Amino acid sequence: MNIAKPNVRPTLNPNEIDQAISQADLSEIESEILEYIRYIGVFNELSLKKALSMPSKPPALYRLCKACEKIGDQLPDQFKTMMAWSEEQSDDNIAWQGNLVCAIAYTCDGTKLQPENATSLYHTFAVHQELFNGLEAD
Image 1 (cartoon, rainbow, N blue to C red):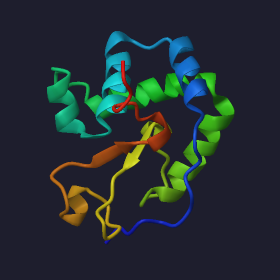
Image 2: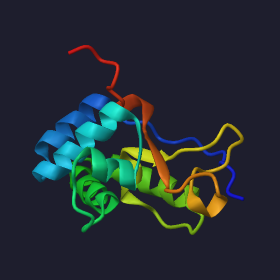
Image 3: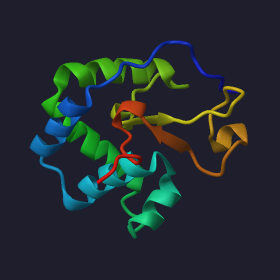
């Protein structure tokens, strides 16, 4: 069973991320993905595809990774730090670029919400707290 690992996630400065997003050469769909996940907070591949009416190819999480790579190019030190944390969190010790803005969600028992643990049909992610903006007034 994949229980939460104790190391602390590096936090990001929301203003720096916003600036990096505006400077990154994001496609329209990459920008929509980031806006959506920052607003909704919790998502998976299927919910993301349905909410944004995306085709199944390429996968939504692949598009998220590409967006995070572009943002990471604008914040190389923070991206490197986050990828080191990502690798430590991975069951396979492989960094995932999407961890720049989100991470796998866990049950209250500390088990990852993923098919491998029989806790969810899809890998379920939560946007990092400092990047969540779903409760902000317009």
